[in-house]
Image (cartoon, rainbow, N blue to C red; front, side, top):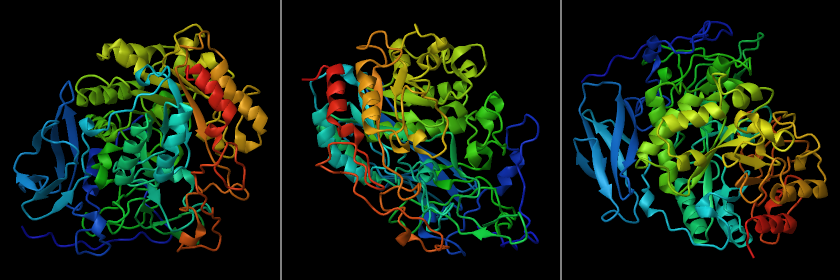
Length: 608
């Protein structure tokens, strides 16, 4: 077929930018007409093309993996969206081509290997998908003495800003100390840049701006993650992911050309890259904000498009500022701090998220935190987890847990207390899970992170009733959100504190010990709040520079507008000699290594 003649790109005059797809009234849906903005990625051989773009200008897709009930076999279906639907497709599994997008594999014949998958069309366009790890190849967990209840009780260490290779080394200590596991920070491909953002090179919150669901994150590659899983499980330590599923990158934080329409200077900024390494660039990603030119292919300005995740413009809510924290419509569909908000009411979006979560379980995660869960309607989350359960053979794994971030703020009545509020993660969510066919055991595995702890623990419980069961409530003292200067999303009063915000070590240690010896709200310390989390963080470098000491926030990597760059020098996260509460400028705190905290945790877990 002959290629369409290129169009002449157009640029708006002056400092003008496009202002499209803005929500009107209570509408939250992107109009179907915006499908004509899709396929913005440059074609192979054209200006702006990078090898990492593959042939995303012509087709996108992902692997949907569905296991049988015993999880000894799985059917892989390659789900594809094409620019030209008249072209025939060919699917390749480990180099063997076939016409069908489906193929079944089993544990007897497919041991200890990953599956390579690609798809091509009859014009020769081709994309290679992320390798598939099957659940049956995850190494067995080494047994340990303690009250772990097959992964349903224990202490999890949040390794804030720890690279995979350092967590892998730390697993010896985690195992010997008796921790249930470690929670990694987001591992999907995410925004990185060579230009400072608000004067900081690659601030920590870039980890929460996904480019795709490829497990190629700032903290490590998919291969490094697989090695980490294998090492930690061989020592009896489980791993938990941080699943960012509410949104993708921020508006204007992408690969396109952007400018600020305010004033007369027409300030522009460079395009972003990503954490993907070794493929000649990032996966392509585009958003609609601060855009002033059109594509020579579509004739339209760019819109929300994340080809490596198989998302197009219609998969996102129209743009709406999140102005009200008590309005369910705003909470669900508002663009949180300008982040492009996924339309999780759409079945295909739910399926794509469930496929991502299935991949997390397949590589060996025992569960995950769900970031920004209160910005996804409870019914949508039930639908997503129903699809995940189906993908995993009809039930959640025995040792699986998930905890959803529901920051209460001043909205506890809406979010937890009043099950009839229309937007409730307490009694309503529990009933909805049961109605969707989740067994009582599986309902207990789906937990809410209790942001009311420790000052108002009851507000994070079902119906805000301090006497309600606490098995589905996860508690924590210091947390990652509170590291951010000026953050006020939790009020701990005098019942808890944030170490890096001036809390004295003895006071902080006392709150972490109390987390295990007698947390506020516990009536039966052995059984209430069976999952408890300890943050292992780092101090902001210098005068509060919000980068990570992993080396990727070091200004030596800056190449554009570097005069005002505030960097963070590299520091090693792993330190075999640390005894916890390290406090050098920009250093990792390693709180989880403190002997008194470990002793209290071991007593609670009936270790030694």
